[in-house]
Length: 278
Image (cartoon, rainbow, N blue to C red):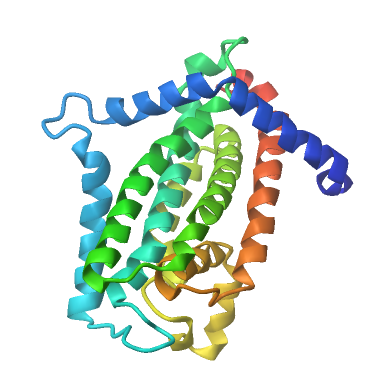
C-alpha cells in the first residue's frame, strides 16, 4: 500500500511510461494502423465499419430514447441544446472507452508470439488499441460538432476545453488497458466481464437520462461510478457550455492520472511472468 502511495515512485513511473511511449511512438502508431485495417481486411466495405458500427448503434439509441420513449430535454437555460446532443456528448466517449477495454482484455493473449520475444516492448500492445479507438472517436466527435454548428447554430466556448478532457480520457484509457491486459493473462474471464459491462454499464451513468430523474435512493450510485465523471466533463464541453459539474473536473483529473500510473506499475510488475503463463 505504501508503495502505491509513494509520490516519488509514482512520478518515476509516470516519467518512465511517457519516455517509453515516446521512444516507441512509430512502432505504436504502425501497430495501431494495422489494428484498424486488419480488423476488416477482405470485407466489402472495409474500414467503413470502423465508423459504421458505432454510428449505427448511436442512431439506434437516439431513435429509441428520442423518438420512441420521447425523452424531452432542451429549450431551457439549464438544458440549452436538444436531447440528441445530450445523449451523444456522453455516449461517444463511453463507447470509445469500452471498445478500448474490450481490445485490452485480449491483446496480450492474441499477441503471445510477440510477448515471448525478449526484445519486443510489450508495453505498446495495450496502447495501440487505445489509439485505434481514438481515431474513430475523433471522427465521430467532429460529426457531433458539425451537427451542433449546423442544427443548433451555436458555437460553444467550452469546445476549447476539448483537448484537456481528451488528454485526461487518453490517460485513463491507457491505465485501464494496462490493468485489464495484465490481469487477463492470469484470469481469462476478463473479456467476458468486459462484454457484460459494455452492455449494462451505459445504463448506470447519466447518459440517457438526467441525474435528477433518478430516485434519491439510487442517485448516489452515479457518484460512485467513476465513469460518470468522464461523462459529466464531456457534457460540460459539448452540451452545457459551462462548468455545470465543476466537481467532476478535479475528480476526473486525479482519477485519470492515478489509474495511468497504477495501471502501468501493475503491468510492469506482472509482465515478467507473461511468457510462462502463455
